[in-house]
Image (cartoon, rainbow, N blue to C red; front, side, top):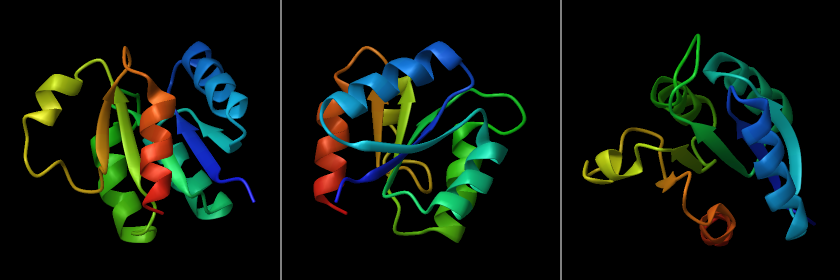
Amino acid sequence: MPHCILIVDDNSMIRRTIRRQIELVGLEVCGEAVDGLDAIEKAQALNPDLIIMDLSMPRMNGLDAAKELMRICPNVPILLNTMHAEVLRGQRPLPAGIRDVVSKTENLVTRVMEALTLV
C-alpha cells in the first residue's frame, strides 16, 4: 500500500512540483494544504503517513503548525521544506514536531523516502 503524503505550501506551483516528484516514485499524495491551519484540518481528516511543510506561510507558519500537529498526530513525521534550511539545521534539537529540514534546492524525494522508512 502506498504511503499517504500531505503537502503544505502556500505556493500552488511548488505544491504541484512536489506532487509530481512524489507520484513519480509511486507514492500517494492524499492532500494539499495552503497554510498551517489548513494543514491541521487536513491532517486530522486524511491521517497522512508524512507531512511535507513549508516554513513561511500566511495565517500559520510551518513551525507553529508543526507544534500543533505533534500534539494531534505525534507519530506523523514532518519534513520542513524551506529555503532557510541551513539556519534551522543549526538548531539542535530541531523545532518541536520537525523530523528533518530539507532545502528547496535539495532532492526532496530522497529525504521523503528516508523519512518513510522510519514510519
